[in-house]
Image 1 (cartoon, rainbow, N blue to C red):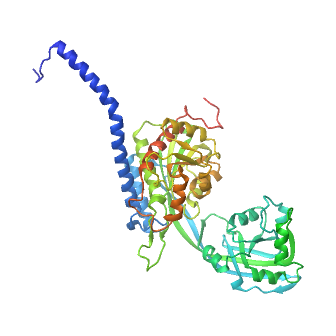
Image 2: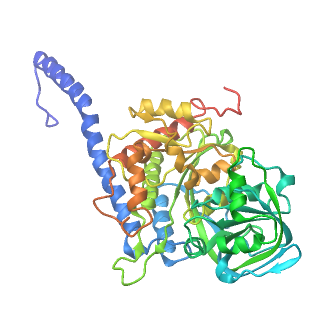
Image 3: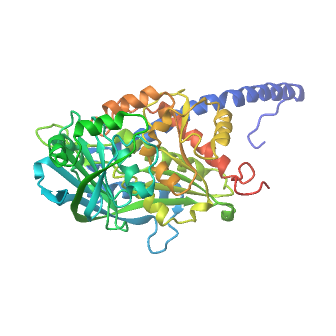
Amino acid sequence: MNGLIAIPARRSRLLHAVLGALAVCVAFLLPATAEAARDKALEKRLRDHIAILASDDFAGRQPGTEGEAMTLRYLGRQWFDLGLQSGTNDPGNPWFAPVTLVAREPGDSRAQFLVNGRHVPVSADEMLLLTSGKRSLVRNAPMLFVGRADRPEYSRNELAGRVAVVLDADEEGSQRQDALLEQGASAVITVLDGSRSLAQVAARRKRTGYALSNDVLGGDLEGFLTEKAMARLLEGSGHTLASLADAARKPGFSPIALRISASIEATTSETSIHTYNLIGKLPGRNPAAGAVLLVSHWDHFGLCAEPPAEDTICNGAVDNASGVAVLTEVARRLAKGPKLDRDVYFLATTAEELGLLGAHAFADSPPVPLSDIVAAFNIDTIAIAPRGTPVAIVGEGMTGLDADISTVVKREKRKLVSGREANEYVRRQDGWALLQHDVPAVMVSSAYGEIGRIRRFFDTRYHRPDDAPGPDVELGGAAQDVALHVALVRWFGDAKTYSPPTQSSP
């Protein structure tokens, strides 16, 4: 009888009732059990990605090296196998968007100073001149003393065509220098009137700089001058360094024109580096509704130490093999799910460690108009927090995304903490480059949920050979963040749940 055993009707009804109750229990219990199994499987996949990408074989994933080629081949194969399509939208360059960098090493420099028409020599061991471009030159520019440059703004009339002179007082001062240059100063000279020596500044600043090849050839011009040399320049000018410092400390201080003119020049030597962003895509049902972007940088520093050090490779396990591992696993889950309204782009950037250059290159030549990107989520340095750690928004208050992110976090039964402390890191990640191009970009991460943890990482293993695969790579929080990012993309990728502020609600 087809091999089946006949069951009396009453016993059959009883058995069906029991099986039905059992099915309810199984249905109730399975998700938690299956979820636990999925978490373990997910953590293993994340660990496997990190072990490969941060292995010595990849030699630290430095742009322009064989380590880059291995990294891009690995990620490209993973993304293709997951079902992603090329996201470059460029038939001539599928998957890999070219990025040309220029490495600039400090070259020659010269300086001449005139005090009341009298030439005052300054030797090479008394001054350091640097430019971010190929060549920067200022001729016969008057010098203007601005003290500590602690005024919020200077008028362009005050600074235009002048060399701003700033007191150091042991401060790094790069933000002050940048602000003065942006407000019109032809150059900025920092007088080392604190404990920092010219040799210490040179060790920190006289390094190879990087830029995109399409950047203008000119660059900012910065100088550092010893206290002794500045005192010599001031002889006969009517001022001393002490009198200027006293004046700068008084309320209502205004910049002081010095009777000194400067002709200064700095050059660099250039080398081109050809590298790539990797871009994948999951097409949506209605691309006209916009796109969601997920970002993570694949690069690191390569060799970062020399013998006799035993470990000479900066493997970048947490920063940022863990980020591209999470990005890949988010792609895996989204590719298996239903198609969203909006396109979803996956971007693995190059040269983040060299100044967010890959992200800037993406913004300069995007595969989709930047105005179409309704939300961007950067994933960086993510594998340090255990399971159950709250998440923070790096970039909180800087976009219109916060309220919707909070909704998704609550739906995922995660805790969201204020990210205002985490915002101290907003300029140090690819999201900042995108924000500068008006793309609403944030990081939503457990790594920043307890701020002391990320600070300890930056103080210890960050950018060191110690950031290598091993038991210190904590994946509990990272695995939960995979699920959270999937939920975020589904929320922002659905035109019914999210409409950007610039569009009217449906």
